[in-house]
Length: 47
Image 1: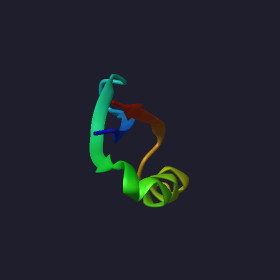
Image 2: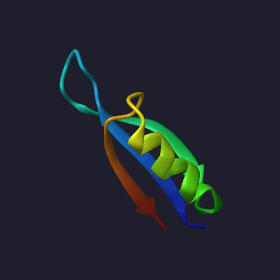
Image 3: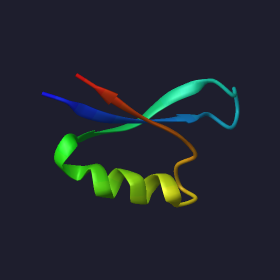
Image 4: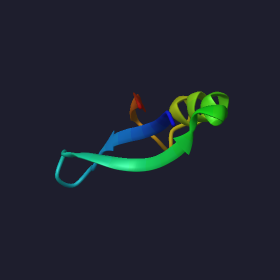
């Protein structure tokens, strides 16, 4: 099953951290989160 990972940078250490995992069905919600100020990073699809 393909999942979406939201990866952002920790403001303290500047290292990549896994913010949250969403199922592929929530791709619209994932893009909305990436557009908000709460998550700044990348959207990664994992099979």
